[in-house]
Length: 205
Figure 1 (tube, rainbow, N blue to C red):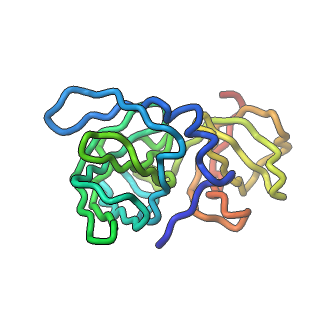
Figure 2 (figure 1 turned 45 degrees about the horizontal axis):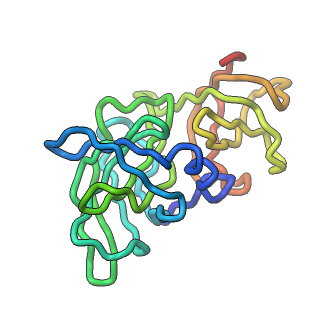
């Protein structure tokens, strides 16, 4: 399954504020601070699955990265650094594939993204969000109700991802601060925004 950028596409508005400076922890090495320009990061085309609890095994695949002598694949949260978890393989035409296990410390309160590093741990590719669920299959998101012009109720979280909300939402209006819990559907019907079917909602951050 080819994953798509969360709305608003592409993810570059987020990267402009958060990915100019990344922290990556390569295996058996001290944490290194790495710089990357927005234009240098390409979209990882396929992440399967895109939801699941800690321990989920995820297959990452993309065909659009420049040829590298060595590839590493990591996972992390926006503005929180990335941990290199596996070495990927790159084929003759630049295809990259890797199998990565979602860390046990991952939380249902925010999404993770996968990132591909070259041999010197400079980031070259980034994925759509992977939504970590709890034992009940739910995610939790805190953020602000927004008017994205999509024709549905939307929530923008602290990482600037936009979610379409469904369920009993009461009288929510743009500007309201809320915390929602519910089941998530990727690439939902509201302009491709990932969708949360809200089971619990409380006002305030």
